[in-house]
Length: 160
Image (cartoon, rainbow, N blue to C red):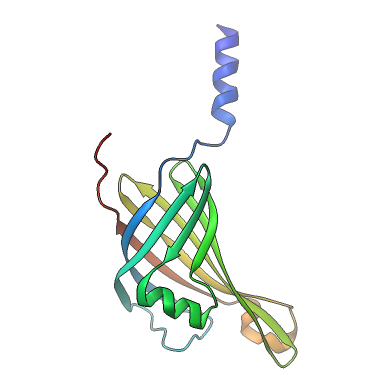
């Protein structure tokens, strides 16, 4: 009895096996506050019908933003691809943009994806921020962030 209890506790203390999060999702996003004062960002604005393709290899995950939204990210941020991990039904992934400079301020825009899957429904948050060299010239980019809430679905599985 003691051995089975210890074995159960040992297994429970490990990370969760990754669920199958792979698929093509159609998501909707709602802008939160514009803390980084990004152009064309209005709090409360929504974007509907954005397609993302999620691929998975064990606990590793890649999220590609497709269509016009992906092209926009390529131009504005420098990438359309999030790379991260799956723990149970939870996804943590990061999109790292191109490095830039303004005067002596060096920065890279980052977008973190934090999401949970419930059946075929994906819901979460995108957090936009700048990783800087910390100089005063970087101003608000040293501490600012923007957020977007999102949710969406993938087609239901066949139940196999």
